[in-house]
Length: 423
Image (cartoon, rainbow, N blue to C red):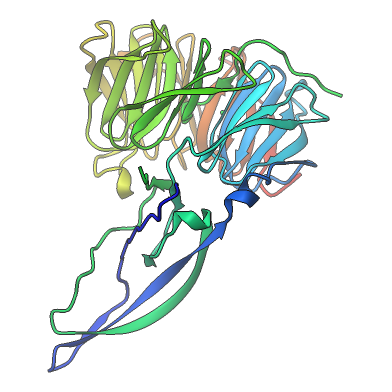
């Protein structure tokens, strides 16, 4: 992080005009980075009053509280002791936050390149107790179109861009640009080298889109290519242990039965957690390139593949993978979907977030007959991710946080809805 990261992405837009002398004029969009200094970043954590949810991301559940990521801004904390009337209680301002996990009364959250440990034992007095600096790769925010240039990691983290246009003249063959499409993922790594008291024991529960997860005394976090391992036996002071190269474009983590299932754009990777301090590769299941969360129950892994854009060119689908032989996962069946994101499984009830097609619920007792055993469909909910909690389902979508009582599968009831842009 002490060196200058020189990173150039060029995406020329609009048109080029040629003359008889091979003169070319090119007009393109310039994205000039805006920075937050490292000093400002490391003094930015604040506990604030409850805020309007504007751009929700990951969700997490612990005891009677729901934690909702406000993309790149921080975390909303919601008292859910009454699921029919959840109450937003506070907002934690954490610039660059995307993911979270909780062990006991300590919340772990990313803040751009840093890992924060936050004491939430007293919801009236939430404090940052530890910060591990530069444990994640330097990242740059998404560029929708145009040119990002001159990125300098010494200036701090990039929080956005000033956008302008410029026309330049290029003569003859004097063209040395490299062309890339704008990327879909939230961040692209440039590595230069999920009053009131909360329980003091146990871990919480994250959704299927999580990039943070806890197992035993260890916190696992992924970037685009690697698994980062932290010892949290002293939950107030994470100890970074190692970084394990996995594959390019890994996206999600799901722990199950002493194993860690890692969803990637090109497949599913399975690691043993028999020794949680040293995850060991067991096997992988390859599929066509697509965005890919995974959940597991019994002998089956369920994977949603979202095609289109940079996620891939395949048709979107739900795949069921037989993992009874963990060393040789096999495709069992696939089902067409429209725009699948997260999913959840609870006692043979499968919940699938199919984007603009809504929430779909299936009886998964026989994975070969899911399509014929759809229990319910909520087509008006633009669904992103879910957490099934035995009888209550948490769902985060484009228009807010929903809760459903699915204790009676013949009579599933919506309990509450916290809207986006509304208190």
